[in-house]
View 1 (cartoon, rainbow, N blue to C red):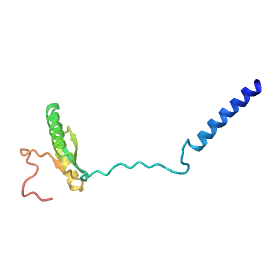
View 2 (cartoon, rainbow, N blue to C red):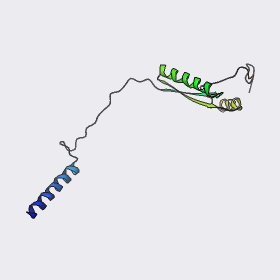
View 3 (spheres, rainbow, N blue to C red):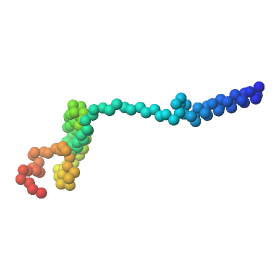
View 4 (tube, rainbow, N blue to C red):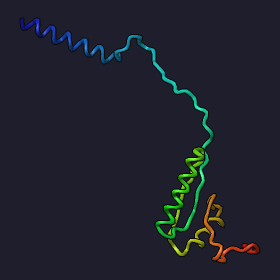
Length: 120
């Protein structure tokens, strides 16, 4: 009886090991590949927006506007980078002069920083 139990245990272990080693496949050596159907998607457009953070309410209005725009135009993504600093226009000018200007940026018409006749 003891020999029979040992034989059955060894047989079960052998069958389990064989199943694991063969990958439990009915068609050895054949891989199954699942392909996702190609979707007609437009290329994604990524834009950057540099702005001045006045107060929380204004930031929320800007972000709400951006999200609303991106909902209407899902192929366009706009990342907003805003700073709360009196040096906003200095930073903006530096970004533009070094060739790293943003696609969208805020300009205060009352600041007098940029005029039509200004030359660098």
